[in-house]
Every structure is written in structure tokens, then in C-alpha cells.
Image 1: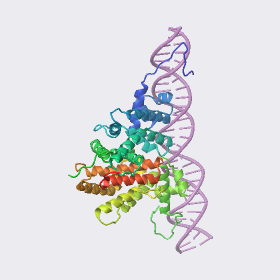
Image 2: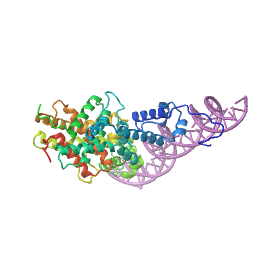
Image 3: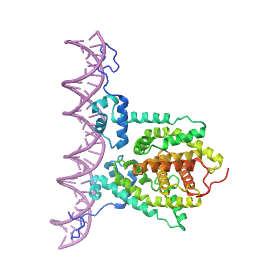
Length: 207
Length: 207
DNA sequence: CGCGGTTCTGAACATGGGTTCCAGAAAGTT
DNA sequence: AACTTTCTGGAACCCATGTTCAGAACCGCG
């Protein structure tokens, strides 16, 4: 009856680790999508009963948002890598976002991209938050593109933000390819080519 | 009982045009997604009662597949544009796929991209078919990339198919940007930049 | 006009899945 | 050990939505 009671008796403490549960939940959502996972599935994945899930996190929607939000924040932070020089930093950020260890299905940014693709239909808030999380990345792109323009590698009349958007767009699409069965190695190769083509090495002269 | 009867009595004729209905259905799916549209919605959108829809097209899934398949075939055909020269042709195809008239929400390939994004989770067949429909486009990309490699604009060790995939990926991502509120004009500018960057004008020397 | 045949329609049905609820177990505190 | 509080699990509830069905409407023909 008292949510934060401080009376004499303390009551039973939690048996599960909240963080572990959230990880399991994210993994499940990541695997089968929002609509594709029932609360039953989540119960199985976490080892908690439905009742416990509801008691601890509220309904399915709230649970998803919790996981989603946490993931976004995580992404925001992981995007803030320290390397010397703004360009190097930006490039590094880009790589960190786009590439993934071979065979690893939980590539960075994946959950974000996938859920956004699925839920942008019905939930503008999620779409917006997801995009916001990409903003750091976008900013990196802008920086790189500007630099490339100064160096003369890209048409100077092009809009840096727009080109940054292209990279973002590419990332979204990469997930689709992954889903379609393209292996991680190939994906990374594509990614590298993309980074190269936008960001800026002078093209080789010939074969 | 007899689907194609040729007996004396002809029975009550259809009151609707099948094609018009399918267009309305596609529009609705395109607007609110598969999960986001109820059969009730479809009924409202088409002006037909639920029963009629079921009688004419089968269940919701079948109806979607019908629309989807038709759209894919349409896309396959529209990808076969005639221009002189294979490179010109490929480039034209690419533009036809990626760009859209300003402010037009029903841009080419849109329905395909969106539904794939939503349903690839749960239906591999749809994901595969969608990708197959993109194949002509992919082939065009491959062609362009090979040409670019011969001309020395792209690293010759890169895999042309992979780079083609990049363009496909980009297209998928563009839809996301559109959804996120980026206006069509900007999108087209991004697209042009993408086409330019892959396809191959030698970069300008400086500003 | 009646009759076979087909289509149209809205109400009724079925079901999957999110949510609630309660009885009992478990863990602190005194 | 008793008491208090919280956790737990699963049965029960509720509702949205896909699907079916019985009857009305409509057509051409004899």
C-alpha cells in the first residue's frame, strides 16, 4: 500500500537484477520486434512472470520505452569517443556506429534502427527520439563533409547536413541488408566504402 | 459455389472496380502500415463492407499480398526504362527510382520500402520478394560501379555488388528521412549527391 | 413474375494477447 | 516466532480485431 515505506518492517527485496532483465527484454525485442513479441515471450526471456513484469515496469509499452530510452542514452554516450582532432574524432565516431565485429548480431545502433523502422508508423515520439539519438552522428557527418568540401573533394554547393543525412540513411538501410542475409563482413566492407566515398580520401587515380 | 459460372442465371454483378479497390487498399496500407490498419479501416477506405472484402480477396493477409505483389510487378516494369547506352540507362533507372516529384507522398518504391521495413521482422517471403524487386536496380548499380572502377573513380578492389547494395540501402534510409519530416526537395538533393558520389563524375578540384 | 445464382452487408463469433487480481511464499525487522 | 511488506505466478478478465454467416439485394432468364 505504501510504495516507499520506511516503517519498522522492511519487506521482501527484489530477487532479480533490474539491469539484467532489461537486457533480456531488449534482446527479445531486438530479435522479434515489438509486435512480434508477446508479454508471454518477455516473461519467458526474463524468467519473470507476467505479474512481476507489470509490477516492476508497468505495461508492455512502458517496458519498451524504458529499454528504448536507455538504449538511446547509451548510444548518445558511446558516440562521444575521445580521439585527437575533430575530424579524426568524427571519423572514429562514424566507424564506431557503423561497423560491427564479424558475426555479431547485436551491432551498435541496430536496435535503434530496427525499432524505428517498425514503429515510426505509429509512434512519432519514438521516431523523433531515435533521430535525436542519431544527432551526434549527424553532426559528425556534417563536420566531415564540410572538411571534404574545403579540401575540394565534394561539390561545394552541396548541403552538408543533407549529406550527413545520407550517411544516416545508409545506416538505416544497412540493417535491412543484414536482415536480408548479407553477412557482417560484407556489410562492413560496404560501410568502409561509404565512409571513404563521402569522407574524403582523394580518389585513386586508376587500377 | 461455382466461382466462374457460365450457367443461365448470371447472379448479382459486382458493384465495385477491383483495381480501384486495390489502389485504395494500397493507399491505406501505405498510410498506416500493415499492423496499423484494421480490416475496418480498409472497409472504410474502400467503401466495401468487411464481408465483401473477404468474399472478393480472402483474408487481410491475402489482400495485402495481392497489393504487394502487384506493386512489385509494377516496379519491375517501371524499372525497365529505355534510354540509349547501358550507363545512361542505368543512371536513368536509378534516378527514376530514387527521386520524386516535389511534395508527392507516393514516391516510387516507397510502399515497397516501408512495408519491407515493417514486415521483414515476421515474414521472410515478403522481405525476399521486396529485395527481388530491387534486383533490377541493384544490377544497374553494379553496372555503374564497374564503369566507375574502370574509369578509376572507385577503389578497384571494392565489390561492385556490395556497392550496389549501398545504394539500395540508401534508398531504404531515405524513406526513413522522409518519414522523419525531411521535405522531398532536400531528399532529392541528397539523392542526387548520392548518385553523383557513386556514379561517377570525377570530383571537382576545388571550390 | 418467379427462380437460380451471385454479391452485399452488418451482426455475431472466435481468438489472441495485454492487463488485472489475488492467494500464497519469501524476506526483512522486532 | 510474529508481523509487515513486497514479490511471485498463473488464473481470470477484457477488448480489439480478424473472420464467418445468414439473410437481403440484385441480376438475367424463362
